[in-house]
Length: 205
Image (cartoon, rainbow, N blue to C red; front, side, top):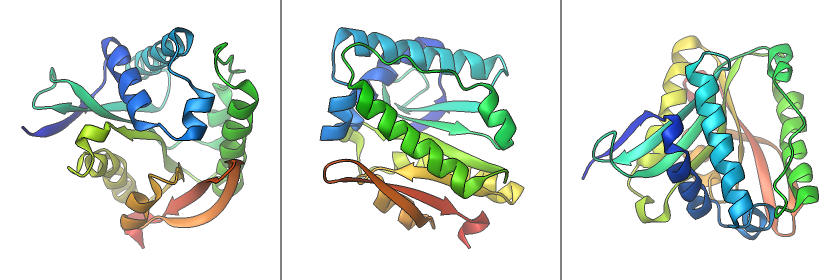
């Protein structure tokens, strides 16, 4: 069965949440976001809000889903991209995040703040595509779906002559190196877990 990429809709939020749980399963991930009812509800609300805002043109977010066969097939992967915006515009829509009760709030703050600081440090005001999240269900790993979701942004970035930025988990790092990303920074938000800031120049040069 072919694996396809389509724009996500708000009704996909429950499936996206389950793919999130299956994809992000390191000790850091499960400590920040245990699979509990309140965390599940939080992620479903988050995904729905991101997609709704994107469809309405209120943000530069794009949430893609990878499905089995057709657009109505089961969701087995996803990617959240951000189109190029200025640093000032990036900060406009940022609100104080209220983490779900079951989450490790201190770890969440440390992890996401660490990513945000490095994003601003390395990209500044330069326009770029930003891969915020990419997850593939373990049952579909190795079938090229992660590459398909990644190429959505790389193709557009190359056409526009801009860089691509992301913050890679240990599991995601090999894929990004394969596509021409270079490591520029890192931090360890959790024991034995290194998150790596990576940049790709236009056309992988």
